[in-house]
Length: 432
Image 1 (spheres, one colour):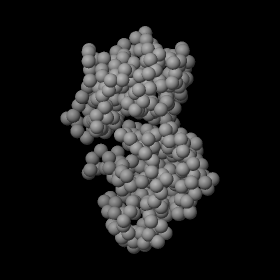
Image 2 (image 1 turned 60 degrees about the horizontal axis):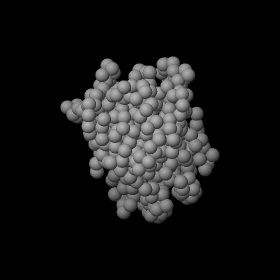
Image 3 (image 1 turned 180 degrees about the vertical axis):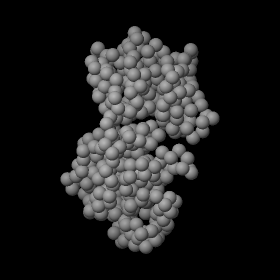
């Protein structure tokens, strides 16, 4: 049993709607398996805090189709998938490739379209009608009305949607300023920095339980057919390998299935904090520094001099290291004047807009080619001899290509975020 919540566009409230639906279902005693469409690290953190279990990303570009089926095969009463951007927004405006729509079609998941009802009634039906008509196989099974002014406002919208589209409305969410979560340049402020998250969600979910038509939603979710069972990939044997993984407020952008794959290969994951610990854990065979917000916590990272020196000494001593995006920034000489580990001959600075945002293909000097994603405001400027292993090419504009994947010693660091849960060759490339 599964359902997707997709939005008319970014900002329509699909994250809030997804969280409140998950919370309302949990209040009814349901075991909810959460998922997030697309390459997102922040929303899954909210899902996990609420549902008490891992939230997995589902991405038609980064993942093989069989992987989508495998990940959705989680033991639970219901799977709830939060969409990404607008329902049809993806790689291009014609095919809708890599959009929430494509994910719903590939996985045969019924879709609830989340619409912002602010200041509208019949016009909300016009929006729904447009989404319904754009594709004959839209997959839209119902409409969830967000930001309604109350029962009377919702009744007007429900009547208009039913009359003009034939689709059922499955309830509404009232305007609730208590759930106006703060944002920063890459999205919402993460759940680990929102200490009052669960009490606020619980309070709002008590109201949502009365305004959402949970029996109708469950009935629609039951229409999802069973997916074929798919075994996991054959992974390399890293038995006895101790991998240090940076995990704290500054570094927590990791795909859950990547970590699962590393464990399944036999690695012991040793989590530590670049912000708070004095030095690296002992006895490591490798180091993994993922993305996050090193620019937000740059002062604290710079102040932890003993850790910076520990990392630099370990890498200069030949420790294997794979670093992504924020990890690259930490290994640089500085971020906007704040000293970092100083291992890579680059200087990073922040800009006021996204740099090279979107899906990419990476061509690696090791002979590998694989899909990836970039999403960052930072720029890295070489200040010395900086060897690069990657040629990165934008998928939507193949004529746009650039060099990245800084290499020094046994360290590889790049802005590209990589999914390797179904690509064992990348696990060997990054950590062997």
